[in-house]
Amino acid sequence: MKTGNVLNVVQLLMEYIKKKILDYGRMIKFSHTIFALPFALSAVALAWEHHSPSFSDFFWILTAMVGARSAAMGFNRIVDADIDSKNKRTAIREIPSGLLSKKEGLVFVALSSLIFIFSAAMLSSLCFILSFPVLFLLLFYSYTKRFSKYCHLYLGFAISLAPIGAWVAITGTLSWNIIFLSLSLMTYIAGFDILYACQDIDFDQSQGLFSLPARIGPQKAMQISSMLHVATFIFLYIMYVTFDMHPVFLAFLGIIGLLLIAEHKLVTPDNLKHINIAFFHVNSVISVLIFIGVLIQGFFR
Image 1 (spheres, rainbow, N blue to C red):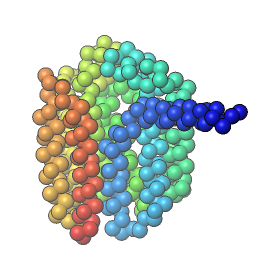
Image 2: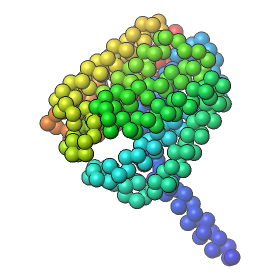
Image 3: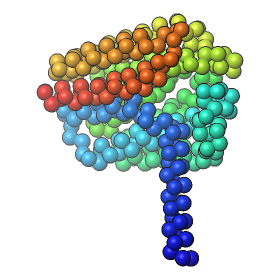
Image 4: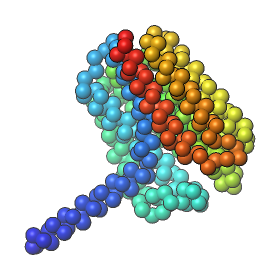
């Protein structure tokens, strides 16, 4: 084969690989990793005050986070593929649109699961043992919308295991005060997931799906979302007290409180046009601010 032909084949192969990586990244909404990852890193920063994590600890925690989330999101896309194909908003997703097949999705989920389990094993034997029930809890979320209107709370619970997992990876034990960081993540995720579900009320009702807005209406659902985000603020404050954090964290907590209020001003039962701004942009800032606040107060201490 001539050199020019070889180069063309290599170029085509590289373009194909790049396309597949982008397709998989869009399938699992990789950019949304920013919602939970800062909470896990916050747990690491809090543990750092009494422990000395190595670079490998950071690396394997990050790898485990990416692997677990990729497996959970990929599995969700496979399980919901037939439902997504009927919904105008989600029919453009990678599996329903044909960009990726279910078989490709299953391979991706299997590899992501193995990466998560292997990363956990590299952290400690305890993390390795715990990786199996954690993975089950993450994957099981994909079925909850079929039988429970509290699926949003379950999603928050499943994701809230991230900071606990990071804490256990660094300290080797489970401390009661880290629970408040996880509870803040649980209520935070559940709250904005309820808001996001308001986009599909008519569709969920037509398919007999159990989202909270579809079952009790958008107004009551948004009230519950607001209460959950009030709980988020309270749990973050309790974390501040129980960890005896530096008062500088309160400045960040105040900004976070204002952003949570702004999120609920942007999205109302009769106006959902700003939901993407509230869902991604505002929540991304909140997550990052929590991590920065924990990190900075640690330097002050």
